[in-house]
Length: 508
Image (tube, rainbow, N blue to C red; front, side, top):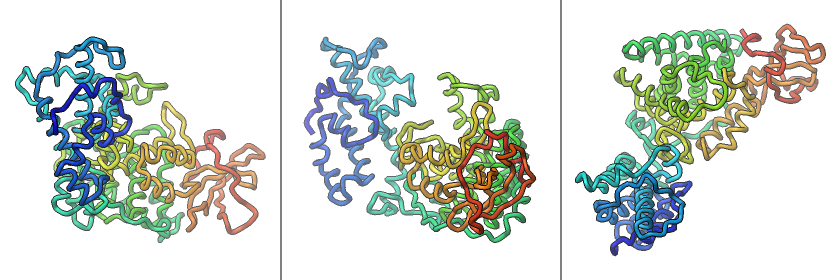
């Protein structure tokens, strides 16, 4: 490629909202040269231009071609430079183009959009990069190392033949736990069954067992947090044994376990939230028909991925209204705080770390802590993001009222493909049904009831009547099977708080 002409970047808007390597090399004015280079054109001929290995190769080749200018001298950092202003002098124009080049290289190295990178690092500036030449350091090596770190595992999978024709990693749990060491989201998602497993144990019989699991879980989580804060390691086997109890309960009757989420005192939201996330993650992992070990590790990951939040001051977690920028920055640190807590314990499965690292990442790259996009996010982190959001939306917290389960699913649907993996969310939403367990519904007989179980079509099958709309009074709890009579049907889903109702008062 001919010597790169940096002046081509003057006046070009590079604040791209989405990462697109073709758009980036087009902005650099080197699209034709890069796509026709021997290495890239060969891979395109073999796999097609959309294959992920082609994208990686393009990023590598571009940085290689820019090596001379990256290792050259840049203008000193200007703290008064404002992007978007009219720059007329030759120096100002050169500085502007250098800024754009550095931003594009940063985007190429990390595989994230410039817009999302700036959002994640609000205090970003190029001071350190511009000083590297004088310090005898290689700016090219810095960007190339970033690129290597973010693509190493995928390239290794590609070389070992573990990538299919669509660019997806083909290893799954049948290959052993090595698949859990992946950090991208390209893991194969197993097929989904048509409906939730048929209950093997009657709901009423399993219910008390599942209710007891909430109090056991809250007690266990509280004990483990106390141990971690004292510098002691997690009792990993005790946590796994608890997760196995959740899984066994789900196997016996999934609806009894899903009811557990609604048996909450409200006095210890965070501990109850961790247990509830574990229940939902167990449910989704079962829906995905994953192997036994993976179900255990995913359930464990959901149980512990918010442990770092216990290190955040309680007044801030319960603050009414919007957090300040500094408060939100501290809240985001719960990922790193949680990682530090887990590191005190040996043999924590990689799946657990991946759920911790990635459960606040978003498909569109606007999440945190690293602004990962789509396939950069582990499939386990994508599961964590879904269950964490759903439980948060449907649970009462000090600073916000809950929304209905159906309302939460509708809200999340709008973010499907942006915040949440589209296919995983589709399966999750389908498995819960249009009126999920725990929903409060108005019946055609003038009573309010809570949904306890679903039928094979994932429609409400058994409801517990607790309130009379005509007399505006509570009534003795009475279970009513739906569908067996044409006399009673669901009129609408309602918010139980509008009638001073709480599921926990009418269960057990």
